[in-house]
Image (tube, rainbow over the protein chains, first blue to last red):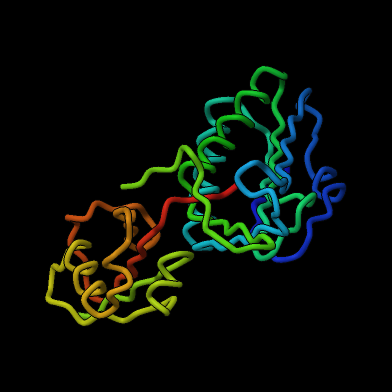
Amino acid sequence: MARTILLKKEPMDIKFFESLLGDETSGAQVWFVGTVRKDADCADLLYLEYEAYEEMALKLLHKMAEEAARIWSLSGWVIVHRLGKVPVGEASLLLGVSAPHRAEAFEACRHILERLKAEVPIWKKEVGETGEKWKANEGSTLG
Amino acid sequence: MRVTVLLFAELRERAGASKVFLDVHDQATGRDLWERLAEERPALASLAYRPLLARNGNYASWDEPFRDGDEAAFLAPVGGG
């Protein structure tokens, strides 16, 4: 029963992580892959650089996964977030959950993702051809 | 008492340090820690927002008193995912 939460400084082998979920009681797995993209805000983006308060981020991610597991009967989860430089087109986040049925799996995956983006102490810097700047998520609180 | 303050991302760049040791009075709050930090590193004082605070890896209110040996962190708006 996979309960894998990692912050990873190197590119992730998505196929390897996907193989970790799945067991006899889970009918459904839902996977989210977040990849680095250029957008209107940073059209000349080269890469994102991620930084984390690792101890706190891991503690919070474990707590979020366990809370989601209780609500949606999850049998397993995999959360892998990149640290360091992630170029355009590469995955920065892999998030998978397994549950008995699809409704629970979709809900749990979405819930964990939204909480991660709002609360977990991970930061990203956009590095483009003409400059760099730290970019906050829309949902994250400003205090 | 001594409190370790961790800084990341924009705050780390402004302060020029990722870890700062502060000697403060007993029961100093997050607010006290920030004031001392901003005094010593003025580039933090001009921050456009009030950062969030963590005490020993948990979000904390700015009024929460710290203890000797605690680890504080001031957190810019997050950007994970």
